[in-house]
Length: 449
Image 1 (cartoon, helix red, strand yellow):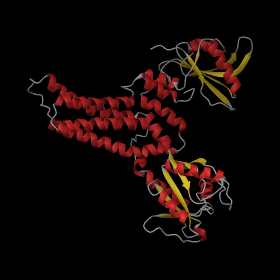
Image 2 (image 1 turned 60 degrees about the vertical axis):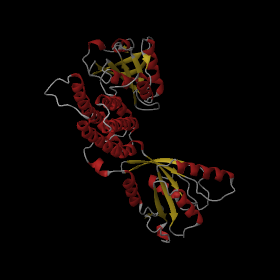
Image 3 (image 1 turned 90 degrees about the horizontal axis):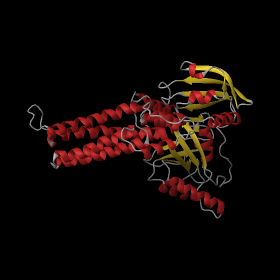
């Protein structure tokens, strides 16, 4: 398939030592040559780098290195030229302008990766993993993204598809060639165990996907408590910086303070909230309302209590408010005493001020959300929300097939649901996908990718 030639700066905007500009398409060599004073690019071997200058026809723009990559052994499987120029937005933008003036088109978001997918260089799971690599903030996020890029998810999904296809193929043989004596007659009683095995595999994958999704997307973690229990001190201690203002004055934190923390490979999206109490201060009331909304939308609550004081009515209200949410109850200021006991409910005792007990808190977070065994083994974990949704669709189709088979519905009707399961799996890899899905997915990429 032939596309027009596209160009974009692949490095982020801002001041930097160098910038990289990528050009992809059949006319890449010719378009770059129009503004490049240096060796004839069309005569150069693939995967070579060449020194020269970029000019606008009258004046020199920059001293550059130009890398030549010939199709199909390139990221997009097209001819690609990459220009390495000096950093700064102005120089790069001037070069891009010149390339557009000579026939290139500014790339859309994600268009280079989209072409890699459309040209068969990547399947859809591999293409999606590119942005996961770019956005990775922890070692576990990087590990999962690389696993997906290396084709582990593709291999897993194709294996499931083949199992569905085996059942469908045997049904088809029975329907089309019933007179063959050497073909085992496929009945509902024969395919029911096969469907159950497949469903068991998918259920296990979905269960393990909880860990994958947490690692990929992070844990939205809200720190709550009454004023002056040490919420902001806890935030600062976790981040190892003075992110939040800490004073002895109640109501100091009036708005939500957000930050991200890499906690042993798990990303916590921390939100420090206003202390909840009765107040007539209008601004503080607004902050408290935001706190309550944050609690409702949180994946995890860190409820902070003051170990140096007995439980108050407000503490009890917060315990009741958060009882149905995943939470860790923290007894702060343990260095000043230990006056709180919650019976059977576990309490993590810390001193945010003196950095005591923080490791125990980290372990509690991981215990709630992460299956360390999955991460320690060479194991394929599904983490992408779209992939999980398609696996849920597959499970539903298999459930319907199983119910039909157990009710002795004609086997060719059972096959319809099995084909739905196979199609849903194909949408994960892009084997079965529509243009709207592809356009939506790649529009979420950054420019230059």
